[in-house]
Length: 109
Image 1 (cartoon, rainbow, N blue to C red):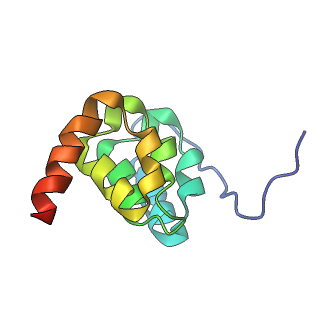
Image 2: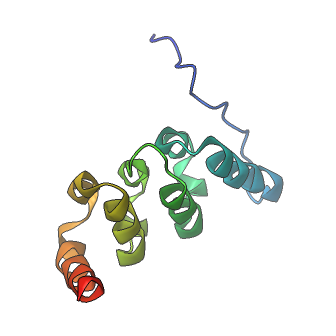
């Protein structure tokens, strides 16, 4: 079994409807500013808001999108990630890429 990284956050115990732990996850994502933090959030706790916070506060260069479930990848979230790092485009669903190109072209005109 691999040794845990120094940067790996401790997982919070999760119980259905446990608002305190969900608030703790927001705090963890905001405080850590690491894309890796989103990796450790259980899928059932990943919301579009939490994922957007992670992408916006990602100081690892836009890689938080890698840990966002496909169903939660919105044009706004994907655009935020790609603006941080163009290579994040490879984690954007194909269906959203054309829409994002149009948005980016409009913002540069």
